[in-house]
Image (cartoon, rainbow, N blue to C red; front, top):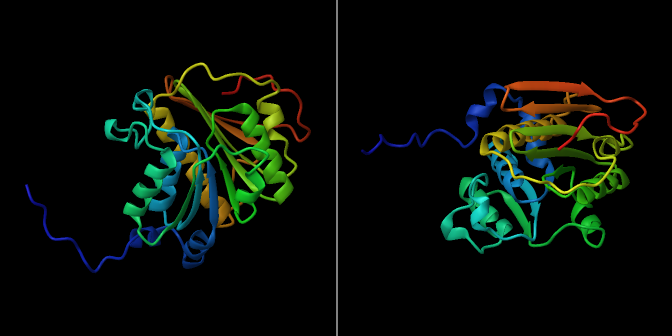
Length: 242
């Protein structure tokens, strides 16, 4: 079945004008976002940001697609097995908006390269599943005076928080390192990535209604979304984090 002709008079992202002011749209276009991790969260968050009008994105990840990614990763397809995730993600984002300035770095971010990648960014996004890297990203953002949008998923559960310089949120969430035991449902990934993208949008547009010193916990099994306020002076966590 062939659909009707495309409306050539409609500009890309024009429908966003109903809920974003001109100043907000301009701020979104100017904001450079560094997404660390191009797995399930990274792919979906980047996809959502480009469709929301962001045109300056850097994505970093050294991993390749494998068959066991296909339960939860947007661009994990049989034909992409063995390909670098950032390579595929870069190509797919450019399909959405060919004018977008998308930079892809085929590497795992750590102390040897993080500062070089982040120094030109305005916002950092944590889409990794390694706790040590999450803590490093917070320290990196602190040193550069930037905010970090944290996200994590595991099975039915997820969490999101916006970490500003000096907050120490990662110490609260992860008093001890641990290894993630299971992957995540695609439904959980979709929700958490959407929340992360919304936090990036609010930071870019100057909204004060961000999840700072708060953690949004997502329980897809029970349908429960709970927002927990963190103490002003961070102490060890008494709530299990993902």
